[in-house]
Length: 286
Image 1 (cartoon, rainbow, N blue to C red):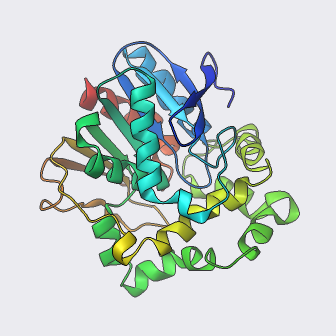
Image 2 (cartoon, rainbow, N blue to C red):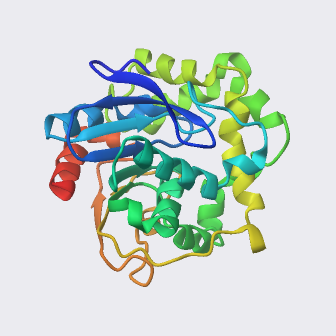
């Protein structure tokens, strides 16, 4: 992962082993990345939280970079991802943890909050919709157009081939254009993210998150449960993948949520406005 000053190691969370980077000492904060990132995406927040007196830990989620890569699609269900988060809390010897999550990390975090409420203290969500909100908005033509790739990812083999084509050209373009702050992703940063996707099986694992989501319906679905913990939603309103209306988790499901819209940020809000994100996280957790 190579984040300046961070300690790196492998952590056994039960079903898989996760590669993590950690900085600081104090109350445990877990930072969960999304697609097509890795733990390196939290480099600004690791430093900011550690400086504020927290033990900040950024894992590579299962399937990514240095972490275990199960082959079965079923092992990338949100239930399995949530269990990994619970396993991290246990592995670090904590009773509870604060959790920060972005994109697919948000799917893991919302499910963790529902299934393991005793292991969570506070929850911070960055551009990751509540599952009930996302399902409702996915019925609209506007969000369907934004989320077209989720359906394309259900095909076998072709998505992997397309993303890897011309040395990951399409993903390089995503990193270059999705962030709104000039220089938010340097070429070195992009190379670091691409390197995390090169290990055999990594692209398939990353896409299996989407495949598993489409299979976890009916009796296999995680039934929504109310999350009573304090929750902070930071939302970059210029997200080209998720509209600003998806920021609202709904008071029925998350009664103690505060939503803060950030008009000048896009999907990668932690890169577009890192100082704002750090300040809000420290204030919320502190």
